[in-house]
Length: 319
Ligand code: 13P
Ligand code: SF4
Image (cartoon, rainbow, N blue to C red; front, side):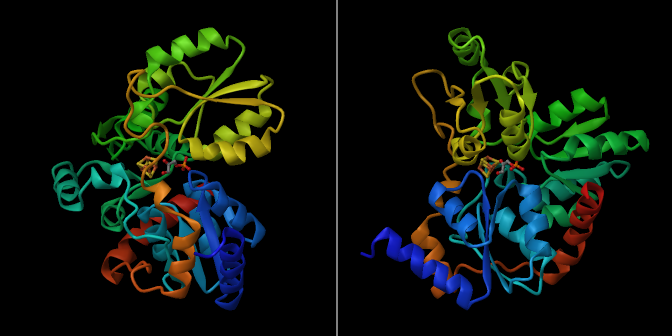
């Protein structure tokens, strides 16, 4: 078995040889985040991963995250080869919103504008009018409300409810959730806040209402990292996947970061780390580069031409 540093050197050589660049989500293993930083790649949130991959001149994107992120990259850059460490990295939001059921739901409400979260399959994006991420969902839905649009929202029920509350928009909500964020627990967070009365509470909006209601800042992964830096508090309680701690701690080396509590106190399922994000590792990145069969993302052109419209609309809005 090769040593880790040897594996890293081999990956670096392959990235150069193949004119490839790594695009990595904050929830992925720190070793991959570090490698992306060292090789001109990007570590970021879902919105910025999409924008970075689309704008980059590389011939190959190595997308480290979950499948919808690889699909988004391919939809935006059909001429690039998009590789993933594994094609089995799902997302409970994507799984919870099958394209056929979703299409039937949309067909039953033809008067509504269809807004879907980035955490969906290419086929669901193809049925949508807009794609949004947690970075821009509030602004985009706010804009649609001003235009007098009624909305179908899918798939995350917590994020949908949060946006509905904030904007007052008329939204029909699909009822899926994220296995990680859905487990953050309000009662336990109240107890933790008592032990750390001066800590700021940073919450990703895929979390349940009881947790969002206790937040000082609600935002996407990149917005939470910025908030950790900008807020005056020296302690932060963080309710999102604990993969974020690598970059967040780099942003605030002298602050104390505390994981928000999950589950019922004695038991959790995801325990603040996405099981699908966890499938990304150094060996899998190397395998994808040297034997790409079974690692490459393809999106049927008939799906892509529709999905790209709703994605482009989002990117143009967020520029
Ligand atoms: P963002 O990075 O866009 O906040 O997304 C969070 C997430 O759950 C991605 O899987
Ligand atoms: Fe999906 Fe949640 Fe995993 Fe993100 S953390 S990929 S939303 S299951």
